[in-house]
Length: 400
Ligand SMILES: Cc1ncc(COP(=O)(O)O)c(C=O)c1O
Image (cartoon, rainbow, N blue to C red; front, side, top):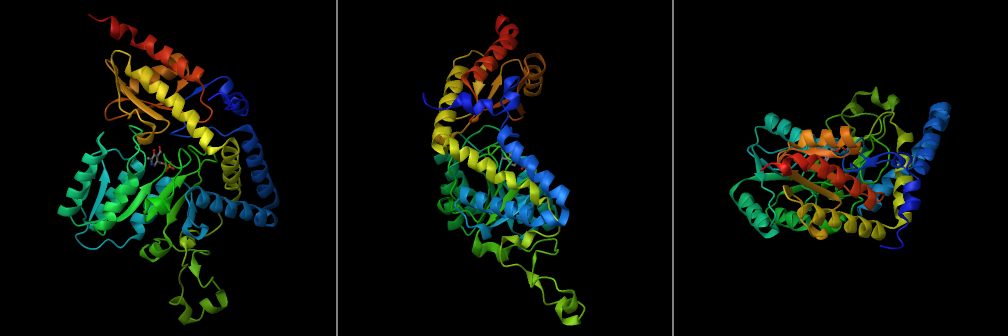
């Protein structure tokens, strides 16, 4: 894309001057302009203490609106938290799983999903069923229908984009089929939000979790859970504190016996928020969103689609490389995963970093490497990575 202001964008990222950063799927880089405001927010609140709280809280509330707007939710359907893992835990710990009910997930989930699920399964004696992610959407949906018809599944927790292969799942179809079977859906949006348009109303999910620190390039330790308004009462928070209850805490009433039993959780998603929080961290969520929106979501998507598609073609034509990410943009995103003959993924990932200072991440099944193409990724970054890969592959390719 000729008029994409790539150089201007890159100039705002200090470390891109000396690093080849291809790991936005783990954490994004924060631009210098967002960082400057982020540090101002931090200093203002830390210096002013209680006097600074209204401003810090105003930034926190703007983050709620920013996250809500990004996924077409309403702000009262958003609980702010630390990360995507928090959101999965909120749902699994908050749902009253009926006896004998089972859970469903996929075979490519992040520990953010798998660990809370196994915890819930231990605590409630529920089975976990696995949908196998395959490179054929229709076959995958048929498998889903079969699983839902033969098991009493209560909740499905499914990533919108696999953190392993980068495959974009037909999530609206998945949620529709779950709904037809009376199954609740929690979508893990950690790898989809800010990569391409995500609309919870179109997707039709009950819950969605996400974070500010990957593709949004916002502050670390900022995340959200979307709770569809009419599903709020399905979740009873495992913790209570000032801010999460209704009516608001009032000591004079609380000391009278009756009120002890009278409070309930707030009617909105904020039933999960209480106590003093890092209000000031969230101000930069809005700045990060605004920065990307200023570049243009469509322009970013077009840029990322172009370079990731080129990368996939380049990898596919190299001997000894197996690509794990679908070729089409509609079934993928900026994540590209592959395996290399003769290389374990962990080892290849380490050598790309140690020998070539290229930052990427290993994937485990199949063992390989994951490259993330983001709005600031250049063709030169990709060329540097491909040259490094070719160099590391030379001894393997030379073998008779
Ligand atoms: C699909 C997916 N879900 C969840 C997470 C965890 O996100 P967080 O660190 O915000 O809990 C990741 C992180 O890599 C991920 O890829």
